[in-house]
Each structure stands twice: as C-alpha cells, then as structure tokens.
Length: 86
Image 1 (cartoon, helix red, strand yellow):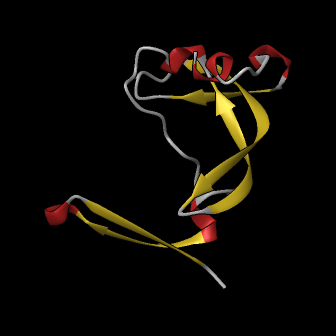
Image 2 (cartoon, helix red, strand yellow):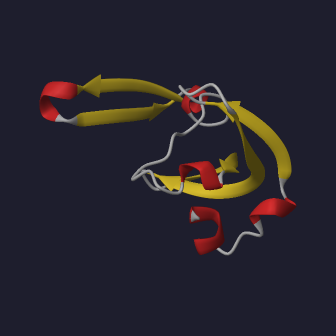
C-alpha cells in the first residue's frame, strides 16, 4: 500500500468509507501529509485504502487539493496546468 511505502501507519488514521462503481463500501484512512506541486508545499489530508492497491493510480480529492487551484486540462497535449488560487 502506498501509505505504508511512505512510512505511514495507515490503520491508525481516521477511518472513513467510500463506494466505488461496485457499490460496496470500502474503508480508507485519513492522514495529514505534505505534498509538493510545482515547487509549492501543501499540507493536505490524504486517504489510503487497501482497496486501491491493485490500481496503477490514485485519486486526489476535490477538497483539500483541487480547491486550491485553477485547473486547465488540455487532453490533446496531455497537459494539466495547476495555478494556485489567490
């Protein structure tokens, strides 16, 4: 699990549940972490779940990350621009 790789004791976090397309509730655990994007450091709350271990990617939540940026997606160029909101 990514959280364990980062040295986080995942089950010690705040337990929540999410539902994927299958509809079954899956547990995840919230932890405060720092991430660096474009040279800027952000303190965010990240969720980690064993249910996503077999996925080649993760999903960043809308609150606590995307709400910090104006986002432009250019699929033709495979480019994403994140500009901090004022």
